Image (tube, rainbow, N blue to C red):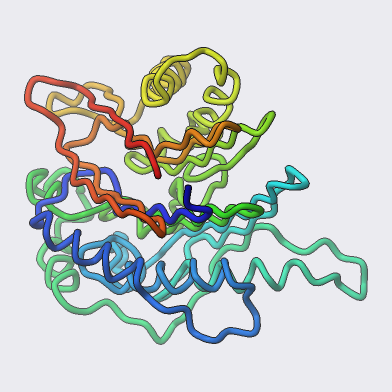
Length: 338
């Protein structure tokens, strides 16, 4: 069995680019070589390297390729979550409404800095707002798109919904699962034409990502989709706890994930809308589950049109461009890891 697993997702949404483009990006990301960074320990350095490769791609909605806010600004949310499998404790950091080419890297730097004790005894911040690189400007296809619809943004309903739906507006995530530590990073530029200052699920630990362990069972969860609903459901933490609470049930992991998502959705007023403007569950969940007997699996569940992800170990790599089957409201599955 491999002692290391890398899990990468490119978001749950409506991806219109060919699957092969994402497959190539996945391979390039997992093969990226971490730069020499004295600030980062090895797993965090690897997280930064993989995230930067993904965030620089026009296929994703984060960094410079983020969906634009109504005022034309680039605002990304990101989180880093590190879980110690020996002490069963975690540390975390978030950067909100941050203009950056590499939001996960910025968050990782903030994570390291907050570990240092302050001489005045002040508590280091877990989350910061508006750490902005003002030298970055909107350009390329997104600038053209924004300029086209800018006059209509004062009455947002004038923007063609089909056109808006064609623009990627989801979250990316990376998890590195080792024998002693699990390091996760998520980032996103949020929804297209969002209100400036809007915070998505990637900036909220417990919503966009979470890791927990109980009696040797490990659950690592990444979420994407409608950020407002994912935050309301505290979805990543909810799924983690449901998996661990039912660890001896004998049921398939993906079935438990779906059950957790549907149950959480019943407890909130959903804000995502279908074509008829009726509330709907619009989320994607993927992650990793491990039992003490070394049974390991990567799982997924999504109600979105597509969900793109993959995992890699020293023995095997698998990539999946999952499409929602016609006439179905959700799809799910799991892959056993060697």
